[in-house]
Length: 257
Image (cartoon, rainbow, N blue to C red):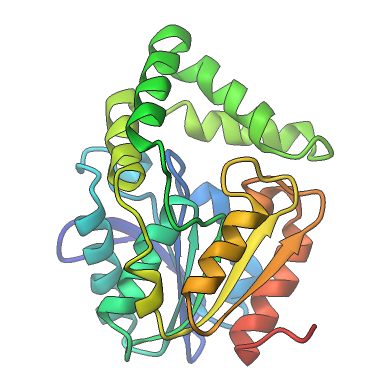
């Protein structure tokens, strides 16, 4: 059942474990990104999933980093229990900041597809603006799915990803992109004191394994897992492997090598 935070963000909650998990998706994507992970999480945890501001059910809300982080804070209040945070790509900007802001209320942190920052942020944004203008959102979404997912990922997953992304408003998409591409994580990551798992696909060309290692060097209590045959959205490419990693880490706080 859909519910609303005090600020009006629509969210969905499932499960009723003694601990909770809040999931924040990647740029331009909604809660669909977690559709394979939520059922397994909800058997152990209370799980909060939502379309971020500017997307899907919350498309009318302006996307910006401060409000994304504030939304997590409101969900922490609603959960009223120990909470783990999972962020993918854009979500790693949000969840790392939430962990720093509310360190006593956040238990463990999972960052999938993260980086200390983008060196060519303004140029990347302008390049994406030109691409969207030339292709339109639907063709861009199809191209994104083809270029982002691993070659072995089933075509129906590509189609679902395309369907989710193509509904994004181009202007809000670019505003969301600017919210992270112009803001680095080098000052934030060292302040993250929670046990942190950094997950990266071996084929990720946006936030590469080298970038994941660079993030881990900044986050004190972190470890990296590289997922074979997975790209930037590893939880779509290798859902079973991601499920195993996440469930083990949330339960123990440390993966055994």
